Amino acid sequence: MKAAVVYYSMSGTCRKIAELISKEIESDLIELLPKKAYPDKGFKKFYWGGKSALMAEKPALEAYRFDADRYDLVIFGTPVWASTFTPPLRTFIEENKEALSSKRFAAYACYKGSGGEKTLKKLKEELGIDRFEKEAACLESDVNKKADVLVKEFCEGLR
Image (cartoon, rainbow, N blue to C red; front, side, top):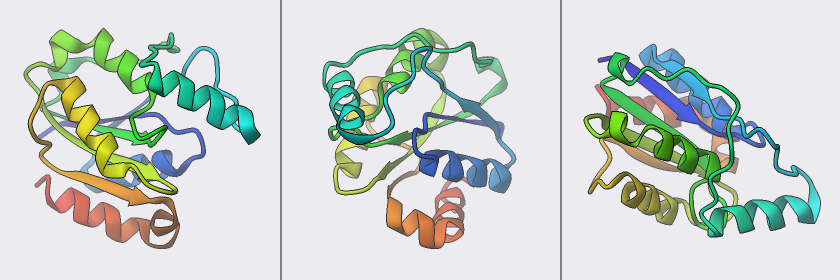
């Protein structure tokens, strides 16, 4: 099984999980970076990120390399913004809709307060699937304390 972890991370939490998953199952990492960065501090962070997520925006992304033919499994990683997945993932899915149609999927969502399960449900809807091979809603404080344990459990479900 060849896998790719496709993720967006503002604070580094989703990146940390992506890197650990990649190491655990020897997958490729594809970090999504919007051409215009979102504010990452204070009120603007929540206002612009939340608005962009709620309005289902699709920001232009920096160039990334994704050859769908190389992968059987695509693992998505996203922070929770306004109880949904981040706009960079929405752009990636739109840009690769046809190529993704024959893939298996897994996903994780990192959050501080709530909305992890709701985010994963919305991501499934966007992909047009009923279930992920494996999914995890990761509370940020748990990631900081026991990321290795969370990732091992997540990856066991993929083998």
